[in-house]
Length: 243
Ligand code: 6PG
Image 1: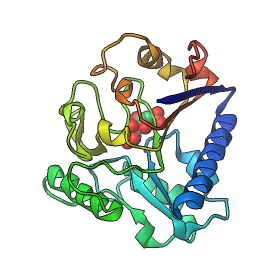
Image 2: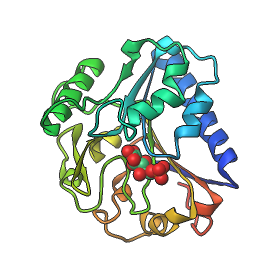
Image 3: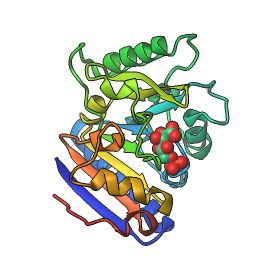
């Protein structure tokens, strides 16, 4: 694992650095493979990043957008990660609808929706059961409890090792989420974390020893690149051990 941790002074710099890194990975992916596959995170931190991407003139037909997790709500629900990314970015650019791959949230049973998304991913990436496809970039946030995607502390989703997609659970509200092993297949996994409220969890995630099930972001150890982009409020106390 090739880990880089960068602490930038404040939010504007964090958004710019995040955008620069995303565009760099996009350029490399399109040069090498003719397309760029990105999984989006939800929450509030990434919204200005999506807004910044929407201002760029990019080869939208070569860009495929997935979601790393989704709240189990209709696509027009204010809590929807799909809706947030649409308003901030995807509704503003000329990206083909077929390049946008939302997680289904219309099945009565979230486990069925998780299986449907997994089948969709396998079809898109032409992989068979047992293989874990590699996305070019997986964007992640981290909650102040140390969760990432919808991998919440001490939940069943943390134990799933043989699937790409599973059902997460936040305060008994179902989510659909990438599994930790699937995230770890990403060519580049990029956490963007801001705010002093994340500092205690970051200390545990970066600690040499701590419980992975209590701080699930510790489970993210990709074979490819791991980036942590932090603002000063979140990252000022961290010992930076880039390796
Ligand atoms: C979600 C996210 C989640 C998020 C963290 C951080 O669906 O909410 O995917 O994992 O990244 O909770 O959220 P903030 O960026 O709002 O702090």
